[in-house]
Image: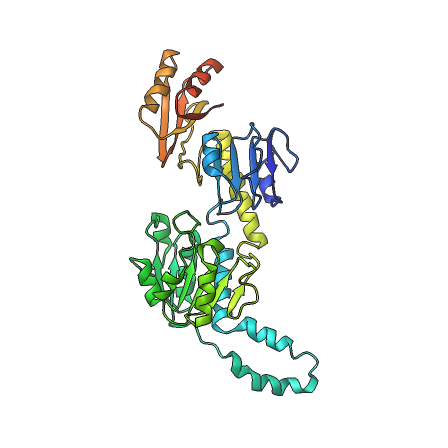
Length: 387
């Protein structure tokens, strides 16, 4: 029985996906893996038994992924599992901002107790909440990953003109886009042409606060900005300045903070992006399957700190090596195996930035001494034998 520790409440679907060989619990001892959602692991004492961490969600800012790579711990996320939930919230944000729904609902609630006066008050007051239709308006979608691609297709389907920007667009996501989505060459092109802009990119060191006064200056006057990705992508002081000046007619975000709450023409959702039971189930199942496949077969899919690397097993004996992306690594590993007369039947090697991963299917089981010898190679983070 393999123990999986949960650091947040995880859908019961995860246990079903893991199967009877696993015990999923928030009290698991000596866990081989960890599943979590928003729990911060930056100051967490990681058990030595852990070989992988699976985040039931896309963002992994709450996990020290680079540090874990050096410990030989693979960090997984679940891109796309909550994509439909976020897409639907983007559509809600579009309708809410375009038709002033939040403001009108707040005003209507203020009429409580007016009795028979309400119908006439409504007829007189509704002129203050005139909005506009989305049909024919241009939306700029920054980031065309699993979520952005769905947003692009959905907004095109309701009659909007769609400009998409993503310099790292994958083949799969490109194929999923409707042909009516026009690709923008630069962010400036998005800013200059969009009536609405929605952002779907991860938070990285080089894009923190990129939604700022310089970006807003390039936008159309009165445009709407929707940020359901990460709060830190926007400079909130610059956002408020743009809203107050009318440069932005609305800012919609999923990350409330003291500066934004209660400000006119700022709509803050309470981090609802993936808050549906369907999304939570999808994320949990995807995380569980990725975790189990790595533990049992050494296959890596959707890791943020190691390359994707999978291989069907051709022998019962498999060695996996997490290591630095450096020259002569494969030669050193194979020479150690050759000294013991161990034949390599098949191998896969992939790299991602500073890290790399090697899967070797071998003809026979190996002893602990040989594994320790491989583990002693400079640049090796972790070696596992999987049978």
